[in-house]
Image (cartoon, rainbow, N blue to C red):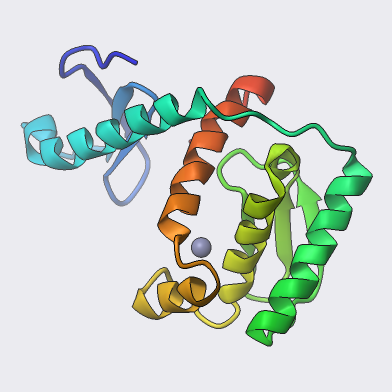
Amino acid sequence: MVLNNYSYKVSYRDIKYPRVELKTGRVLFVLPFGYNSDNLFEKHKGWIYKKIDFIEDCLDGAKSKGLVERSDEEFKGLIRKAIKGASLNLKVKINKVYFRKMKTKWASLSSLKNLTVNRFMKYLPEYLIGYIIFHELAHVIEKKHNGQFWQIISKRHSDYQKFEKELFEYWFKVSEKVGMQRN
Ligand SMILES: [Zn+2]
């Protein structure tokens, strides 16, 4: 991947807070109307380069990843099994499980403890499906990605950082296949 030397775009929208988006290879500043955009790249350079490094690393890692082909039935069975295991391990319960095609995340847990599973998870190896479900169910105990949260995760998955990174790699890989884009 090549980042056009320091090239970036600025988009003004009816929003409250400025943000930086980094889709593969292009930096986009999304700014509220009237926001002063001077030196934005300079100001966020450190963060941007770090992100670019990470993305390049993941794209590289994605090359050696293979997607799994399995039936929807088999996939749902794996999800059920993972939920059962994680519920027992964490001593938590969730309500409903929804399956949807999502463009920004692998899964999410609502405040009502309903779990939404991204259908594209179907292409992941079983251990990563298990990891995602464990991660989401741990959010029943702790909503934020803070120290306590990662402590809970590391009791079961001591190398969770490796898994989190792999999930980015697979995200690129699955994106290629189904044309989804992380916004
Ligand atoms: Zn999380």
